[in-house]
Image (tube, rainbow, N blue to C red; front, side, top):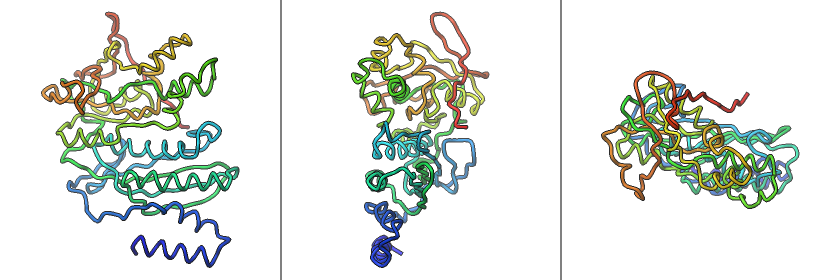
Length: 340
């Protein structure tokens, strides 16, 4: 059944059963839905649990949940921001594998306290959020519950013969991040503490509520032949460094003065007497990529190029993660956010 036929059936059902709000909600979710492409992935492989996404026969698959009052709060964020952040978290996982998203299955739990307007805005944001990324929304489910929840299974495609893996780092590689760090954690701190003059840093709050990331960066890396280790920074740099080292069976050395703390975070920390490295190292929900590149690859040597990234260290033989700072070498412990 094509998208037009499905839409017509939904409209007929809505007319026949006007009291069944679920049909109207589904119609709203599918309002901007793209037609699914019939093209299959160019490269075939299989990969199970342990990376940012699984892979089956060339398709990349990831699943993320966003629970109200845990991952988003509607007294802080607009419905549109909450939806966008949820979609970004899924897209980031596909990007971290060097892929591009193609299809989505979306589940929506409508919170019992949501107004009709909130439901409408969430549905519209979901429809537009997938459509503007050319992701075909091909199915899902709608329910109601004590609190709201978004659930997405996102299917992407492998765009190059070798995908990016957490286990792909090798001794001798250079270590990079694809953007500045600390903004999301700083935004959360501002929301929780509301210090005097916090509105001056509204951009940090906005980033926490609705991060804007380089969604195609991983696919660009893979297409350019980069095949090192990679993962997105969702649980904080300190934790992801340890994930990368453990998965690849290597040691990582990070230079403290090379960590790209965002300039606005530095300014905020100076204002309130805080340590910016706490936000850069242990703050989650960055959705910046942490990755390695062979020392023979020079695509990051030109500042201002599309490949601009921040080199923060190197990959060595051995185990563990170490920070080199002020002539000292210390162990970097994982400070992961716990979801349980």
